[in-house]
Image 1 (tube, one colour):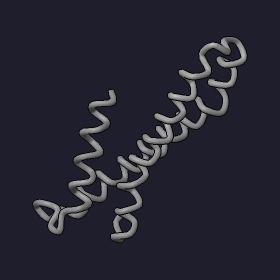
Image 2: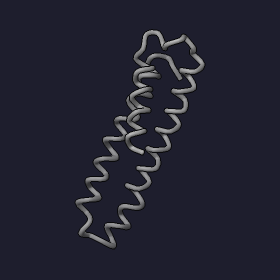
Image 3: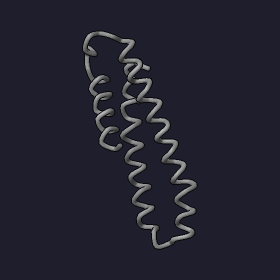
Length: 96
């Protein structure tokens, strides 16, 4: 799952950065960015839900897992930065 996400993000970044998006099919580029944006938003919401709801419950039941949970929260913050960056660049370039 994570490797496939990294590949999809790399492809989206390459598309955003390209001066000429390949065959010039702007609709296909827009569709790719729209799907990426939707997936990234869903992933971010999923991680925020874990951070706010699931992890506190786990920590209440198993305080010994607090360091692991903090590590997962840091990972979620890193992923949030990675997945929001391509969407921001696309918006700055006037793409969907």
